Length: 590
Image 1: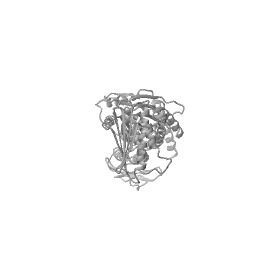
Image 2 (image 1 turned 30 degrees about the vertical axis):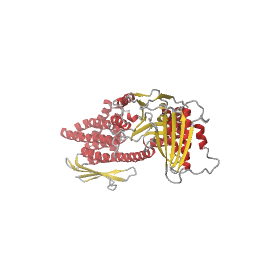
Image 3 (image 1 turned 60 degrees about the horizontal axis):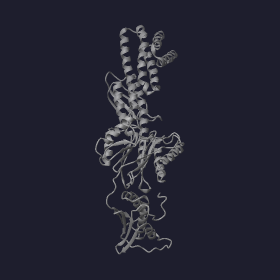
Image 4 (image 1 turned 90 degrees about the horizontal axis):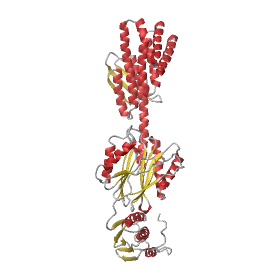
C-alpha cells in the first residue's frame, strides 16, 4: 500500500471508529467526505472496498461478541455513504449498481460472520461446535459442501484454487490442530473475499474450540471430584429413612452443591445441604473442604447454631473470596425435635404424614464466609411420625427471570399435590416435576422421613466386633423412649445392655466372623433384654477388669446369666418408673 493509501486508510479507520462511538448524521457526513477524497485521490472502487474491509475486520476482531452485529451493520451504512459520491462521479450508474450488489453480498457475509461468532461462543460441546462451523461456513461463503476435521496435521495457511477453499484451525501456540474445507461454489469460483471471510471464521472458531476444550477438561475434573467426595450411599439410622437425588449442572459449569447425613450420639441424626457460591473447579474444591469440616463439627455434638458459627469461621480461613450457603439440622427420632440453622440457604420444607407441606419459618442467617462475627439463629420445631424434611439447593427451584418465591411455591405445590408416597417415589416425583431438562445449575435434593415408632420387640443380629456396640446404642436410643422409657431409664438400660453385648464380643468367640443376637421387649411397664451368643465365654485373665456384671446389676432390677454348650444368654429386666435412682453416671449422655 502506497503512502497516499496508508494516509487514506488511517483517516477512514479514524472516521469509522468515530461513527461507531457517536453515530448519527454527523458520522455519516465524514463517510461522504471520504468518498470525495477517494475520487480526488483517484482511488479505484477495489481500493476503497479493500480499505473498508480491512478497517471493518479490525473493528470486528476487537469488538465484544454482543457488539458484533451492530458493528457489521454500521459498516454497511458507513461504506454505502462513502460510495454515494464516489459512485456518482467515478463510475456510471450500471457499475454503481454492481458495486452495491457486491457490497450487499459482502455486508451479508460480514453479518453472517458476526452471527457465527455469537453462535460458536454460545456452544459448549466441541462436537456441536464443529458441526455448526461447517454449516455456517457453507452459508456465509455460498458453498455446496463443507468438511471440518481435527486431524492435527494440515496447511498452516489459507489455500484457494477456484473449486476448493481451505482454512486451518490454529491454536494459541500457533499449531494447526484442524481445518475447514469448502467446495462447490454456488456462483463462479471462490474469490479473495471468500478466502478472507473463511480465514476470519476459522480464527474465531479456533479460539472458541480451544475454550470449549478447556471448559470440558475442567468440567471433567470437577465432576470427578464431586463424584468422589459426595456420599455413595446414605447411612442407615434407626427411626428415619433418607433419600437423595443429585444432578450435576449440564448446560453450564459444574457447581459446588453438597449434602451430608450424619449419625449422631443418642440416636440423633444430623442433616446438611449446601451450595458453594461460584462455579467450576474452584467451587468443587471448596465443597471438598466443607463436607468433612461440617461432619467433624457435627460429631462434637454442638447444636446447629454453634456448628454454623464454626463453619463460618472455617470458610474464612480458606479463601476470603469464597462463600457457601448451608442448612444444618439435627433431628431426634425419639422425640421428633428438630433444630435447624440456616446460613443464607432456601428454607427447609416439611411434609406431614397427612400431606400438608409448609416451609420452616425463620429468617436465614448470613452465608458461610461473609464474616466470623455473627450469631446464627436457630429454629426449633417438632416433627410428627411420618413427617418428611426436604432440604434442597436453589437449582431445584430457581428459574431465570422468575422470583425465587415463585419457585418455592411451585416446590410446595408439587410436594403436597399427591398422597404421601414412599420416600423414593417422592424424590422422583419432585425431581421429574421441577427438573424437566438438563439443568444449568447443580440440583441436590435430600429427604429425611421420621418413621412411626417400632411396634413389638426389637430384634437385632449384630457382628461380634466392637463397632457393633455403636449400632446397638443407636437402635436402643430410639426404641426405648418410644416404648415409654424416660431419659435416665434409657441411659441405664443402654449402658447395661452394651455391657452384656461387650462381653459377648470379647469373651464368646475366638478369631473369625461371628454374630450375637439382642431382643428387647416392653410389656406391662417393664423392659426385658436378652443378649445371646453361641460361643463359650473365656475366663477373665485381667483382674482389673470383669466388672461388667456388677454394673449390670447396679443398673437393672434383675440380671440372669445362663451358659450352656450352645452359648450364653444374658437376661436383663428393668421396671419403668422414671425417677428411681439406679446408678450415678447420668449427667452427660454424649
